[in-house]
Image (cartoon, rainbow, N blue to C red; front, side, top):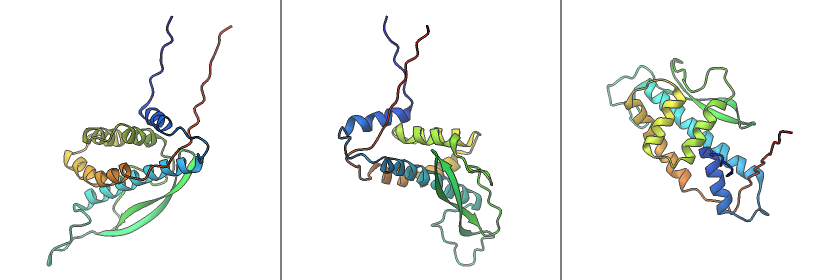
Amino acid sequence: MKKQQKTLSPFELEAKKLVDKYADYKKIKKEDFHNEISHMFKTFTEALLRAELSQHLGYEKSNRSKKGVHRPNKRNGFSGKTVNFNSNNFHLKIPRDRNGTFENKLLGKYETNLGDIEEQVFSLFASGMSYENIVNTIKSIYKKEISNAWISSVTDKLLPEIEKWKSRKIENSYPILYIDGMFFNV
């Protein structure tokens, strides 16, 4: 009888590719791997938050107001928030508006754990990041129907970040510990 193979999640497949690519395990630093994953997640999350603010304000950051055109609300920097990700804490820059009316949909006001979003972001980066994958991931993160125009504006903001992530320097090796267990009924 053949043993059934376990289907791997997209993140596990990406991790397996890294292990197969870099076979020199002597120079591995666990912190480097965790830092890379946390940085990827932080970059993606902050890009989503900036896109939410642009949607709330009705204009992109780069669009300066024309002379004589008054915008009732403007960007007003960032506030900081420490969130828990993958049992590590890191600092997110949450954008804010001048009137204080912006409330992001991604993180609740007092929410500090990003466990639900974590797996979806991993699957996005592991799945090759096509436009369709990005759209599907954004829809699943927000868990409701959102307009195609909003999704388009978010993906326009994310694509440069994703391209930068794809062209980053790859270290010689990354640590991965895979532990498997076997259970026997007696």
